[in-house]
Amino acid sequence: MAIRIAAVKTASLSDDKKEVIVATSGKYTGDLELRFAHECLDDLIDSLIRARNVMQPAAPIGSATRQAAAPVTEKGGSGNPDEVRFELPKNFTITADTSGRGLILFILNHRLEGQVGYALSPDAAKQVAGGLTKSADALLSLNQAATSQN
Image (cartoon, rainbow, N blue to C red; front, side):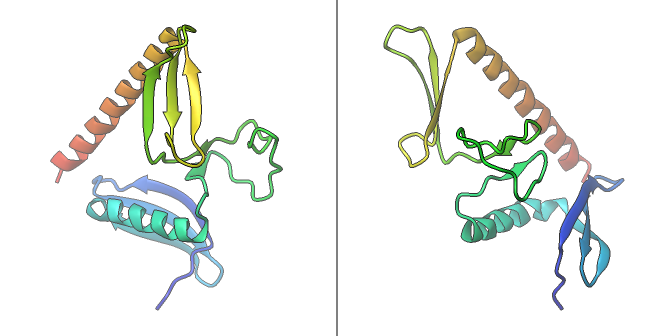
C-alpha cells in the first residue's frame, strides 16, 4: 500500500538516538510519524536525491524558507533575504590568484556547466577554512557519538 506524503513538518532524533523521526502530513492519511533507523539514512537520502535529480535536474538541495512562487532576481536569488539555497557541487578547486591581486580563488563545479567562483582575501580564506574545519569536526563528533551508542 502506498502512502502519499504532501508535507514534511519536522524531523528529530528519537530519545535513544537510533532513529530519525519525520513528522509528515498527507491528504488522505492526515498526520503521520515516520521512523528511519540511522543505518539506512544515507541510502534514503541518496535515493531521494536521485529521484529529485530525475524530476528537477538543476534543483537546489534546500532552502531555509520555502516559497513556491518567489520571484527570481537578476542575480538568481528569490528576492527573499531570509532564503538560502544550497547545492552540492560536483567538484571544486581552490588556488591563489596569480595576477597579483592577492586573492584566493574558490571555484565550485570547476570546468563544468554552471561553475561559480568566489575571490577571497587571505584573511577571509583562513576564516572559511577555520569554519569548515570546526563544522566538520563537530559533525564527525556527532556521528562518532551516535555510532558508539549502538
